[in-house]
Length: 208
Image 1 (tube, rainbow, N blue to C red):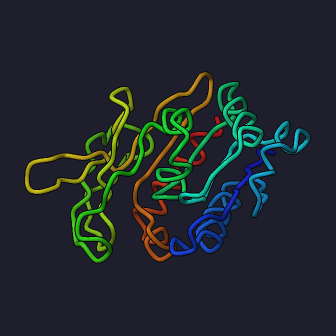
Image 2: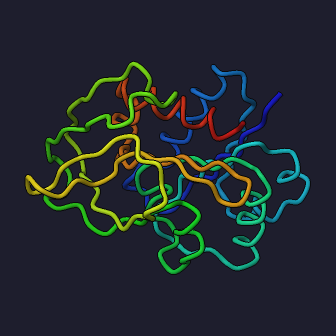
C-alpha cells in the first residue's frame, strides 16, 4: 500500500486542516493510506519519512528550520512525490528558495484579492492529469506567480487580458515527481469537481 503524509498548519485563513482532510479523503479513495500531521517536525521523523510515497504540505507562509527542510528536500529528491495546492504549497516558507525551486513556483500577488471570477483554461488535454477535462470558471483568488520555465504547464489563467499564467503544472525534482495547482483558497474551492479531479489525479501521479 502507498502512504501519504499531509502536514497542515500555517496561516489559518486557508483552512489548512479542512483542506488536508479533504485531500486525504481523495487519496484514501485511491487506496493510499494517509497520515495528517500538524507539525513540521514530522519531516525529521526518519521512520515516518522512510515509508512515505507522497508528501502533501498544506502550510501557507510560516517558517521552516533547516533541520525540518533538509529531510523534505532529500525525500523528494530521492523519489518521494510532492503535491499540493494554492498557498499550502505555492506560498509556503517564503525565505527558502530551494523549496520554491522544488515546487516550481512561488506566489507573488492576487490582484483583486478573494472574489475574482476568472477562467481556467486546460492547455494540455493530452496529459493524463487533464485528460477529458474542459475549461471552467472559478470565483476565488487568482494567483500571479513566479514560475520555473521548466515546468510542464497543464492549465492557465489570463490576467489583464494579456498575461497567461500557469495554474497547474508538473515538474521533477531529482527523482521525485511534483504536482502543483494554484486553486484552493479554501476547502470549498478544493471541493469543486474540476479542482478535486485535478488534485486527485495529480497526487496519485506524484506517488508513482
